[in-house]
Image (tube, rainbow, N blue to C red; front, side, top):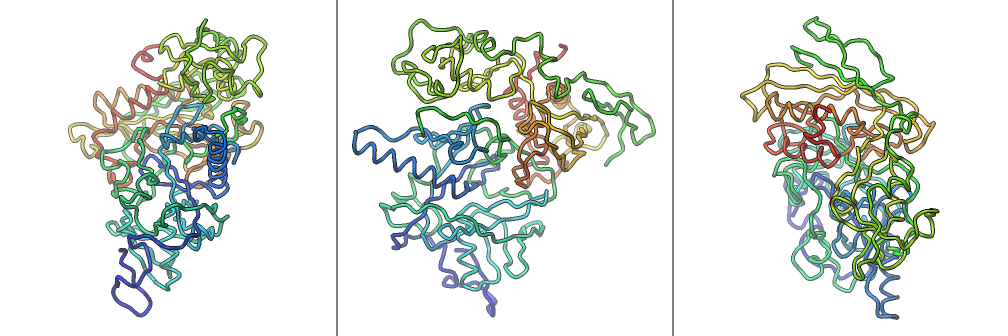
Length: 552
């Protein structure tokens, strides 16, 4: 029970708040809310229109199943509900969200709330993030806050819900109970969530082990890789929000809502320190002057020849980038097709034509053609691979949607900029035996190129320069060298939609986590973190950046 303090009362009383006491309500009107889990273990609700679409597809599938005896729909492409979510598919059996162009997977869950709750009224509570935008609380917190407000409470404790925060409704602030750091909160009216029929009594409180909560609790397989310390696994209450003002780390999962690429739908399965040394890595097209270290010694820039955005295909001229040529280079067409194996791109049987045959045409690849990737041996419809490649960066590389093996050299869409590297003797927590490497990324606003979501439109670059830190030891220096390769390949940033502010056409992080604080790892962005270097090496490898790239 949350400790809530009401007007005229000095202490919290168990009866002071109608929820979220564990239990089940009797109201038969219910709304369904779908949420996805970000890399910090926080649950983020999809918008009401997206949840409505998911519910409609499932209900239509259930009705069809009752008539024909077929099973429940296995996958739901979210691009049908919102074009911005075009790369994303929800896999219903495993309760995971799959991003088709990168292979990133996230857990999802479905919760049912009373129709007169915040969810049923379309009320969303949000906290102000470091970039000045607003991030929603998970829906059970929104419901709890709205109940507290409706019963005239002035303050409420979110501890029982797994958050180390208090919310003051009068001052409209959230306070970290440990650090006393404060953030603004707001109450926003949005579209109500979809009405659904609830076969079991509605659960109005914290999830328990009852028959209703267990299958809908979102506790399916957590397939994403958690990038921080072990205390940041899902359901950890240690770090649900960034308590200080740090650079936000984005991933290209839903929370870092992707740019509005052409939809990959149409499948029939509707579903500031004293620097001692300085080095600058600069992308072509940026300033060529050296950066001066604070000790007065100017270090020359190391110019990394980067293709300008509008010259991307020219820079990759040595690699066949015609979509059909790339697909045929890395996939060997099979004579026979596995009878019971599915294509995980279109979710159709490999023995059936590609689910993208209605929207992706090719004069050289037949809809029923099945190919096997030459190294990892995973099989897909060749037309599906063609659609996936055509929807991406078209850089001459392919990535297996199943195991993430990369074929060719993967490049990104990072705008031009500069990477500055410095060292200083101060140690990072957990690395007392060495100094520190400081990386500073400089990217300015500009105009989007043809590889970006909206060519010709401006993009913003908020929060630059961005400061990042590594231990100056053998493994830290190895990570640094690989980050230089990733920078050269334009993989560290991209242009998309900010997870924290919702701003589109802006520079965001791109799946390679950086430590933006030297200490205080309550946020997950600082030290100590004994797992960080291994985790970031794995993230770099997932982008095709490994030790084999050094010296090339």
